[in-house]
Amino acid sequence: MTNRRKFIQQVAAAGIASSLPTYLYSQEKSSQKMIWADLIHLSYNMWEDHVPLKYRDENFICTTCQEAREWAHGYRPNLTFDEMVWNALLKEMAGVGMNMVVIDLGDAIKYESHPEIAVKNAWTPEKLKAELAKMRKLGLEPIPKLNFATTHDIWLGKYARMVSSDTYYAVCRDLINEVIALFDHPRFFHLGMDEETAAHQVNQDYAVIRQNDLWWGDLYFFISEVEKNGVRPWIWSDYAWHKPELFFRKMPKSVLQSNWYYGSNFDINTLSEQEKPYIKLYDDLEKYGYDQVPTGSNHSVAENFESTVDYCKKVIDPARLYGFMTAPWRPTLSPCQDRHKEAISQVARAIKKS
Image (cartoon, rainbow, N blue to C red; front, side):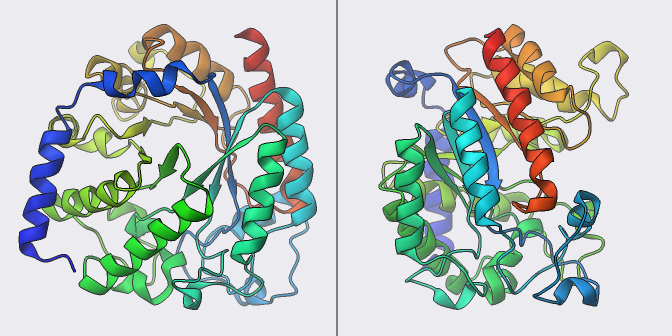
């Protein structure tokens, strides 16, 4: 169990890790192609907002993508996923030359270590392994994602209300170890860790925010559990928007970074003061020597992904630019299929230009 002594050890270990040179991972990157990834959700339980009763009906099927967007908030006890859409998207990704899928697993797997968190109709471990094999045959590298940010951890069920307790650490350790085994020790493990602020939880029925050394201590715990398995941790980088000095002092170089910005204007000189940190972080991560997978999206504007690629190729050294990821932020459901396909076509255009 994690007690105060172990917490101090985690902080000390991460302090050492933050000074490790990036060249330790250069061999890993040199043998790999540029990453062209898509973030796809198997589970869409990411928020604990109140959900209208119609969305709690397991037979409810959204009829428009807008309705699917509204459905994005709140816990649903059933799997929010359409396998036909999944299969079509995988084939389309492979067909345009994409080579990685980051799968947000959440509570969509009936984990052997903690089956109690699984939603109804969750995949069995055997089903997941069969799908991973299918993806690899298509040339798509599957990467697991479990978001441990408190803003997005409703998928943890009752354990989401036990954050930073001994029980919480034990459950998270079990899940990380099991997922890594299921994925046959993947190259990366995405830990999320984005948007853990009060502003992002104003509508949640239950809000919890880790701050200061507690946030860092828990992050170091997750990093340690992933790295013990020989896998590289990966996170969203937006903590640095708010506390850049602390981020660059304490964030280990071993952690792969994904900054994200979904707007259309990439001219820092004309952005508002509120927006500048979103773009500037690409430059600052490069300045401080972090490896990056910049993330764009068609969530807000259609031109964002290609603009993200154009900008980041100018400011990030190729040795630290691992690739790019698109994040459509839509459920894997039929009403949203066109939006997913649009995201893939945007990546396809960027690949052709590269």
